[in-house]
Each structure stands twice: as structure tokens, then as C-alpha cells.
Image 1 (cartoon, rainbow over the protein chains, first blue to last red):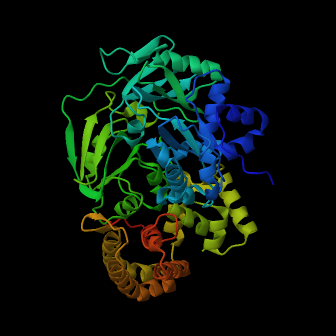
Image 2 (cartoon, chains in turn green, brown):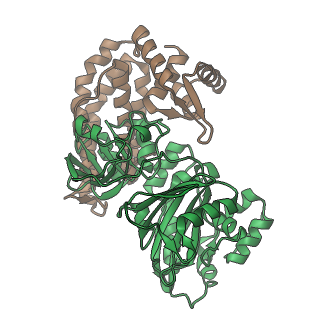
Length: 378
Length: 199
């Protein structure tokens, strides 16, 4: 029986990464912290980081967190779940993150992030994914917080290409779907911009897309990366790394549609969310991506695992009393039901939509110009 | 009813299941279930999701399931099951109304802070559950598989009464709604019916 590791700063994290068996290391610090350690080990700059390991008893939290510097006034508190590599990606968006946490609230915020492992959504996902309840533990990553100028993600397609999406300010707006991100496709030749006329995103070290390509080369493989550009001088910092597990469907550079169209349905579950739609006929379709807006005719028990991973749900059939709406409410998932078959067919995969579960309306923000036929089976 | 059909039917209803839950639901020994799923996998009717350790039904498996159902039936007494369908559809509406009241109160999520309100909704559930009793018994007479739903629904009511607020509409915990939805799907698949509008 080994003692529970204490609070780790960046140096302790790097040393643990180098000396502990890989499985034990990830089990202790979680996927996010392990990714940060890997980035730092390859010479890629990461924010100052402290880790509260998984399994740390609640009674020891206060003492542990006393070890972070008092001089840092505001903190970002993020989960780092200890699930195996293969499924880590699937937990995207299921755990709690708190930003701009005052030093005095750091312990309480850490407790809330740890407690998010017991939320109904996580329980639903675990049950559906065959992971024992309580089989997940959450390590917590603490980093000094300063609102960034921009933040985003890179999804690698190959060692030399990938898709860059970013938003001004915090990257969490990207995950929650509150803001429509800007996007660039990067290949060997450089960027193919999606917003015509806008220059590619640049930090103090040059084009961010080029930095992402360089980071992939340093890591030796295509990667899912998260980054931020520090507010003061646009210094690029890497905030997350995972080896690529699935390649996103390729979308041709898009133009906003001339007119936004509004689809009326029934309010199924309250809340609003914006995101990329994935239209599916079958629940085992490999085109599904966690964090997307699930668009389907109706739902049956087999769809629950996807609902637990979805950002929002749109169905053709059903009203506010359908099974889908009941589950969506339980999962706090914005949901519009009963839009009808014709309207549903107009929301093809790749469409950016705003789902308003309070009003029972879906706004189509932009259509993929290829009509979605390529991406549907991408 | 053959073991092969029992397993295919369970997977058609649920989409996927672990070996352990297949054993529990079908009442078959582990070795028997293992033999069946391996045969089904060899024929391409199911596949193992190794990461999640669950068996999934494939498109070919759904075709196979429909073929067996159409040839041999999915209930010992299909007419007996069919005659309970209309009663189920009517209760289904009532149950989902109860679920919504449990989840939403005056347009806002129910925070379960008002025991009087919650007790009232639990009372409504008990009324639906009581009305479902004879219907469920009749379904179990028509096909023994349906007896399992009755036991699981009873258990969910007991858990709710004992203070487990997630036992009515929870997800991933064999809540009343979850078992009911599975029962609904089983009826539709067994009788080869389309989902009723609004359900």
C-alpha cells in the first residue's frame, strides 16, 4: 500500500511521469495532468500547474491546497479524470470546470469539481459504458487563471494536418457551445480559411496552426491539443494533449447561409446550446462524436449512451412527454422534440445549430456547403 | 424460445449489454451465454465492444432478429400480448405525465425540496403502478420474459418510497422510467409495431 501522493507542482509531475509506471501515473493524476506532463517533457510550454491526485481524502484537501502559492489571486480548477486512455476522450464535457476562482474558494471549488464525478450525466454515461459506478476518480488540476485573449482546440488529422477552432476569451465557451468558433483547416501547404478574408489566428510565436503542426511533430503523432493565447502578450500555452483517437469528418470550408432558418418544435428539456449537428439513423453509427448536437428521428434505450455525451438533442417525433425528453431533462440536456421529419432532414451532419429547449426552437446558423453528404459518412 | 433468440431480442431492446446482464436477464448459465454470443459474433449478428466490455447488436443481427420473430413469434401467446398493447399505450401517457411533474415544477426543475409536492407525485406514480399491475400480469402470462419487468418496476417503487429520488426518472440506475421505456421497446419489437406518435 503506497501513501497517497501529495500535491504535485510541475517539477514533481514531470518527475513522477518519468519514474512511476505509466498506468499508476495516469491513475493518480488523471488524463489531463498526464497530458500536461507529456507536453512539458517535449519542451512545449504549459501553464504553471499543481495537481491534487485522485484518491486524496477530503480531510487532506485543505492541507494539500495550502501548498499552492498565496501570491496567485485567481485560479482555474479543472478535472483530470482517471479513466483509461481509450475512453478518456468520451468524457469530454461531463465534468465540472471552474474559472476565475479566488484563492479563498480554492478548496470549495476543488471539492465541487471532484463531486462532479457523481453527477447524473456521469452516472448515466458510466452505466451505459459499462464502467462501474465509482470506477472513476477525479484528480484536480489547479492553474493560475487570467482570462486569455483567445483559446481553442486543434484536432489532428495526420502528422501534418488538422482542424483549428478557437474563440475569443475562455475556451470553455467552445465546449459549452455558447459561442460559434472560428475555424481553419491546416494542411501541408498552410491554412484553408473558413471565414473568408480573415487572417489566420496568430500568437507571439506566429500562426497558431503552424505551432500546432510543430507540436505534433514534437509529440511524434497526430494530436488533440488545447491551447490559450495569454492576454498580455499572446504567448501560446498548451493546456491539454491527447493522442488522436478518431479523425473528425472533413468539412469543406463553409460560408454562413444567406438567411438563418428557424425550425419550430416542442420544448423537451430546458436550456440552450449551440453546436455541430450529427444526424444519425442508428445509435451505433461511427460518425457520432461526443459533444455534438444529436439529431435523430426518435430515441429508444440504445440511444442513452449517446444522449449522455451530447451537447443537445433534436428529434423529429415526440412531444414534451416522450422518453427522449424525460431522459434529456434528467441529463440537463437542452432538447427540442417533434420538429417533424422534413425539418429533421434539413439538419444534416455538419450543420451549426442553436438548440433552444425553452422555446422549442432550433436555429440553423450555417449549412455545410456540400449539403453534408461527405461528412455524413466521414 | 431459443437461447439465441432470447439474447438477440435482449440486445435488440437494449442496444448493448454486458455478458453478466445477459445472464441475469435470460437466466442462462455463464457458459451457455458465452457460447451463444460467440456463435452470434461469428455470424456477424453481434460484436464485442472491447473497451466497454459490452455486446452490441449489428445491422445484420437486427435483420436476423426480425426474421426469427416473424417466423416463430417473440411471445408464447402473441394475441395475449397484443390485447394488452392499447392498455399500455394509455398508461404510458399517464406515466410520462408523472415523470414530467417529478422533473419540472412550475416550469423549473424540481429541486425535491418540498416533501409535500414530491409525496403527491409519488402518490400519482403508485396509482399508475397499481393500474399497471393486471396489465403486467397479463403480459407475463402471454410471455414469461415480461415477468422480469414487473419485478424491476416493483423494486423501483420501493427504492423511491425509501427516499431514492433518482428511482423514478434517473438514468443508468434501473429507475421506473428506464425499466418502463425498456418494456415499451420490448412490446413494440415483439409485436413489430411502430412507435406511437408522441411517445
